[in-house]
Length: 262
Image 1 (cartoon, rainbow, N blue to C red):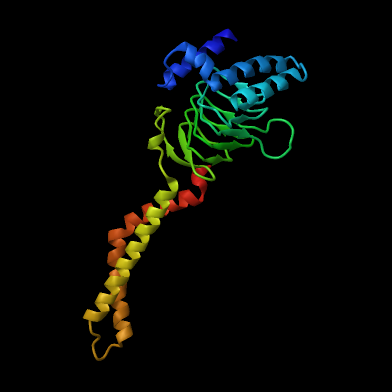
Image 2 (cartoon, rainbow, N blue to C red):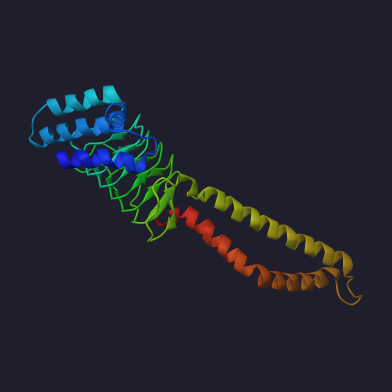
């Protein structure tokens, strides 16, 4: 247990540039204090001692603003940054080197017994205000964007954003957990794809109007039939030049609507 507490202490200096000395970290970091209370309470909880573990977690909640059920399993080198409003449920499991920001909830859904809270892998970053709900599994090296609501399993080496959470990035490369500015915006990508589609359709309509104004139908061919032949030719040319762009936009939109695999 002592080695685990030392690992929790050291990880703060690695991940928080504001941590300057051990005295400040020991007395002014509620995340570390909440973990200290939890690890003591968790050991008593495993021994089936009644009341005392829950009372210890209640005291920790009062002092730090972080509520961790004594039944939760938390690995080594976990850093709860700031931590106000963090809630971790009874059957939650958090792997090593996880980084959790303020306002995060690792909660359950419904009143069923047994495993009802998330299992979070190693080196996972859960952004500010994110909610991970239910008996789901979050793989290793996953980043969950601020304010996201994750309701389904997430494979390893992914980035998840949005409500509900959608996978917007997959990679086998380990990322810097503090690079929150590099998170993509799935909704913005879909809106951009739809705007591009509208612009393409407007260009086609403009070309059709120009062709109808310029070309006059011969006397022996009805005007609507002649215009139809020109329109068909225009659409063929447009499909050749813009087909690849349309297929790419369709893929982006379909992935968004399908939840990108989540």
